[in-house]
Length: 237
Image (cartoon, rainbow, N blue to C red; front, side, top):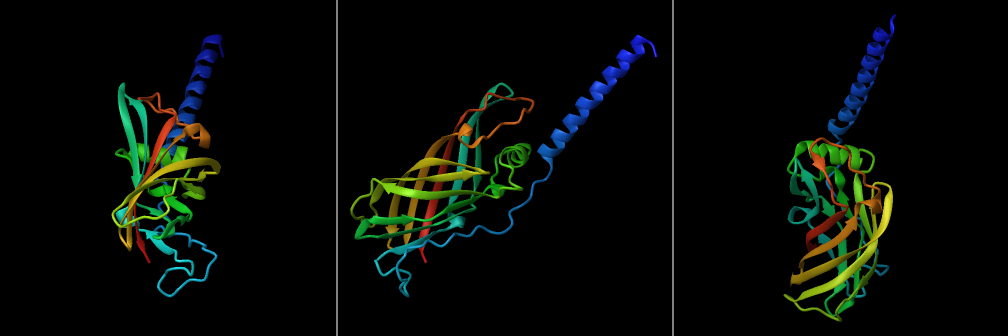
């Protein structure tokens, strides 16, 4: 084999290797990810007090359950898509959790584990959805995003029906296998004795959770900041 033939052979081998790697990457990125294993369910909130028959604890706390069908979790971050600044928004209604409080002593409020099914997060682009689930969140292995509250601050002493209250919930947010402390700013209103409506918002950085964006043609300058928002409705059980 002469030198020219050898060079061409090496070039073809190199091209073949690159194409094989691209095919493997594309196959992993755009394969159909696993669907949710089951509808979302909350983890029961431990109050450490005997439960009364009407759903209120002996200490006067009433448990409110987040209603997925009336709630929504979203993330928002910016990217440059084919040269155009674009806001990427992913949403799901698969969020669950419990809140407990006493109208007369709101300082006793307790917030249970909040769970989000990452396999159900959807944007406006199916290719992006697959890339997020297969190459960023790895939802086949890590189905749930969880938030474990550790402190609730800024609470008023009591609340009235129809009154807007603002406070903060700090806790450990786990995405995939990485946990980082995050504080959500919460606004909530008890629209009736049995129903709470509110919004919790936090800004996190992708590097907090080692979230790497795969290289995709046409996508550039993906923001580090990600805005997380939970619009929730919770009802007394």
